[in-house]
Length: 186
Image (cartoon, rainbow, N blue to C red; front, side, top):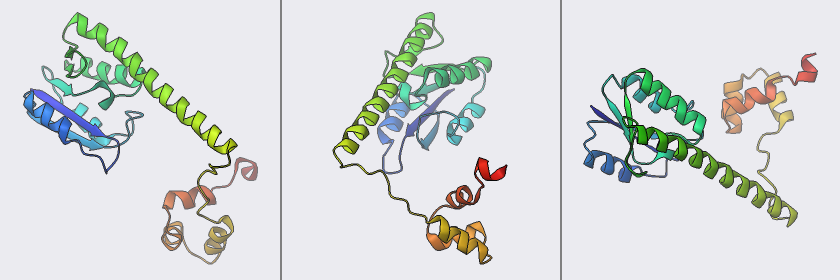
């Protein structure tokens, strides 16, 4: 069975081009995800897809960066597929197919290129931030939560969920603020 996986990074993006391409190539079961692709660990739909595939299946993606952004993640996914007897095919990178020796070689080279591309993009972003800070244009994001206000609300008897709701922020942010620093914990 051909099993497809399509991913976009944000909810305002559409993966219709990917899904159309996968369908045109005979994919019978399709998994779609809207999640950042920096690591494979934080993508629940990808994990469902990897759990779904069975021996003899082939996992198909349109581009290599849809399934992994680092060589390590890609090799981990491919290792998982190989252990299950599942092939891997990437349509837009020379019809890469791990059921052939040439496809395996090409996969390794392209994985390194995808990781290199991500590193270069992050480096440019860091350089841009440094330059913007030097020009006085970039200030970083503004603190949205006042620690004293959180402490006062906690002291008044509110729990983290109620504090988060009142301050219109995530509950995780409140837990981070309420968590003692390593020095305080000593």
